Image (tube, rainbow, N blue to C red; front, side, top):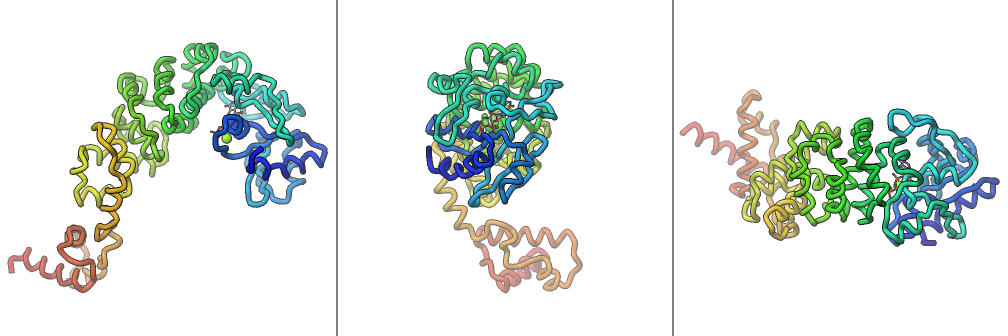
Length: 397
Ligand code: ATP
Ligand code: MG
């Protein structure tokens, strides 16, 4: 067991002391077996949510209806979920109501893939009723039980299968792959937001090319928002080897390569700020083709996005990214934001004894450019002087 699990042991031991069963489950166990860095630790228990809340001093009821309580121990939070099986599935979606069960086996049985259905007890022993460890050895993603049934219960699992391909580089088992081909259309019943979560993970994975290839081969791409008619462009995405450093880069790269505009991005129901950031990157990529296109004005405009734009630009033009060099140039600009100007609207209104109007925004913009290009120092008195001179010149006096 590693340090993270050892720290979490107290949660398991406390539950057991109170007469309940408790195990580590899910992605953390899988990643531990794969010797990958583990993320959040999930615990499954026979205790019901109310019982969990009564036992631990610090808890947050994050998903009582689904049996999940967050337990905070020594500053670390753990999701503790009651053994459950899911109620009847309707509309190919995860059901709203769940039934709590008292056996670990049933809880593991409702999980998506065999590699995600392994439990670990407090001694580090694995409980693996569905052959998950073997699947990890074979590097295969395979549903627990019949793939067709499992995808009919919850169609999102098909997207999850492909995002795990992207993250782990594994292959799909024959049955799992065939079922995706057959039932891909069920993805239409799934909320776009849930699809986007999995698709974003796919875009950010080190084996994205492999996942995109499978997305096309299984025809699953045809049920993704705005991508149904973009097969050829999507195939090109596979050629981008660099792993994106951020979700902005991942979506900008997709949008650039498959040519998604603002309206089409909106269909993915991404947060507005993300769509805005992506749109700015797309705008930059229209102008910036070579390293020389990073002018002072471009640096000022797009400085915050340098790593993302530069990674995509370099990949597009078979070039090396020059992120560090550009960041250095950006940092030495006299200002990086209008807010850093040593003069503001109030100062100018007082200086010219004029009412606010379009002239003010124009004047601020001119000052901004002048400071950026080092025509004048960013000091209040100097800027006032410059503004007055500039005004006189404009008035030809
Ligand atoms: P990650 O490391 O990316 O979080 P994960 O395997 O932990 O991967 P989660 O989405 O956090 O994925 O889900 C936790 C566990 O819950 C999974 O390992 C799986 O056992 C189960 N699970 C999640 N989503 C589903 C689903 N749609 N159907 C069945 N089981 C699921
Ligand atoms: Mg997880």
